[in-house]
Image 1 (cartoon, rainbow, N blue to C red):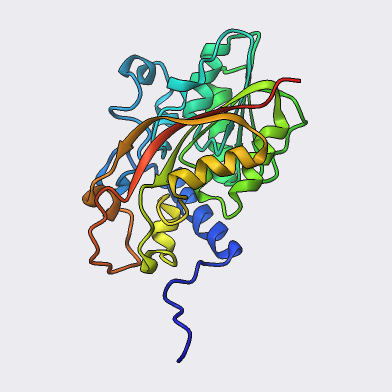
Image 2 (cartoon, helix red, strand yellow; image 1 turned 60 degrees about the vertical axis):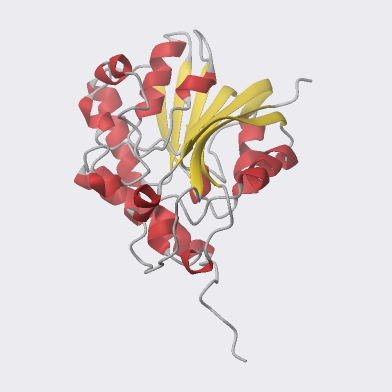
Amino acid sequence: MADDKSSETPQEDEIRKAVRDRYRQVAVKEVPCCSEERGATCGCGGIYPSAELLSLPAEALVASAGCGNPMAIAELREGLTVVDLGSGGGIDVFLASKRVGAGGKAYGIDATPEMISRARKTAMENKFDNVEFRLGEIEHIPLEPDIADVVISNCVINLSPDKPKVFREALRILKPGGKLAVSDMVLLRPLPPELKKDMSAWSSCLSGALLAEDYIEAIKSAGFERAEIVSKVVYTDAQLRAGVTDSDTSIDLSELAASCGVVAFKPAR
């Protein structure tokens, strides 16, 4: 019998291209946050306090594509250095910059040149002097070891074809005792086989997600301690289906995935 190719996972270069193409469109087209086109992956309404959103440049908000609020669990304060993995238009970097103040630093790392260009322009025009955006993959973070007090990320690690390497890189750039605080999509039950090769589902943060227990185990295996899920928002079938355009699956996607807040710590020396 011939092998069934319907459930094959796409190759790494195919995944990276699909992700870059999607977020290039977000950067260029400026799809309004929380529009019907966004589905479950929206980084604004109902997630961040309104006062925080009003304090940010509008151009940062329209390029937001997160699924949670890592700032709610990051516990940032004056003088800290924070690194955002997959910073996009910069919403979390700009929020972090306000919390760490002039004595702190906020870095944004993103693999999409259009996002980096947009975020740098926003930072310059709005005089965010304590931020820096660097082009790079989160599996190869362009920063030196032991630089960050906190590493954050908003619905990006699930997009990586090599998540264990992302967590090892996060550990590398954190100072001893530093904190990982991320919002990310995780699976609550196994993914339907037909969605594994759906590139729209990959780039909209579903098909690349790990089961919740596997996500935590990957963090622990990288060398972190005290890894745990501290918040969870479960998605409906309609929310998830909005991002699945390359598959005609009839399976009910309700409670298949959730946006989770996850924290962990680098061991202190």
